[in-house]
Image (tube, rainbow, N blue to C red; front, side):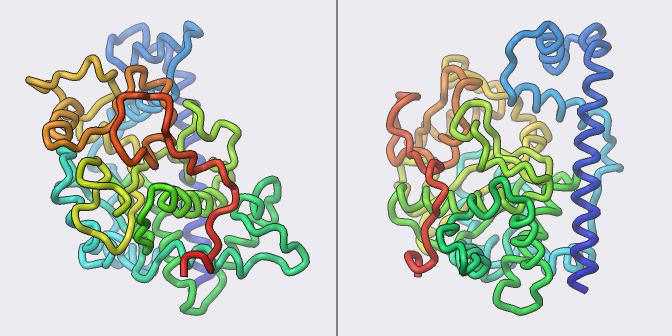
Length: 371
């Protein structure tokens, strides 16, 4: 069964990569036609690209997605029955009774994000934790190369080692790493299908008490996912990491990543609303923002605080009115997305200084440090 599931997931991933390539080809063929015939935001973005102007990567991504969603009728969007989900993943990642979803519920219900309450999300398997991630990675480290203790070193420039890391996990039949194996399958499925899912929430199983510790735990999780990326992109190894050009990617899909932790107080947008026994990472595909009409990122100076005219402005106004302020860059295209993932502990309008350098270390916390 495990081998058949691995083959199925492999097929799903290959399909996602092929679909991504097709979208790129479609963009190249259609850009000039769209730019000439339309005056939509997507068409304006295409016109700038054709003219050789500098365009933020997020804007190009949004333009791709906007055109894709316009071309795909709702009836064609994939919906998988629960039984299929359970066969593929080993559990139903949409089950609201999962410990992950139950733990995240106070955040989902109390956050000021205007579409959070009705958002559809998948979640990590029961008993998944970053501790389990690190224990597995260390178990796969070769005795004759003790210096290779980091997640990045296990995969950087070494496809065979990366394949060994993933294939050993998927072929392992014991119960010890089943939560890790099942969660990786579910996340791959989430990233590989047009399922109109808004998010994938990971319960990290660690209640970080400081932003520094929270950053290290987040780093460990994202590097593991990056190293297991079936598209072999390994975004956490990219030289663009920490720069404005970087986006978290997995299986050919791009995600906006946010985190929540007890390390953040009530004046932070990352406050966990009393959930003090764990921390979370939330992966949102950019298509989710389009499906809910949030639109593209806008500068802080363009926010309508008094009479919000967009869902983005309404969300910003609600957070700020509640005292949970967060940094809204004046030039979103120049703002590194790593700053959104693990933000500062306290609010500041300063866009450039004081941000946690959580991603720079390729050596995450050791398993023994988190016990």
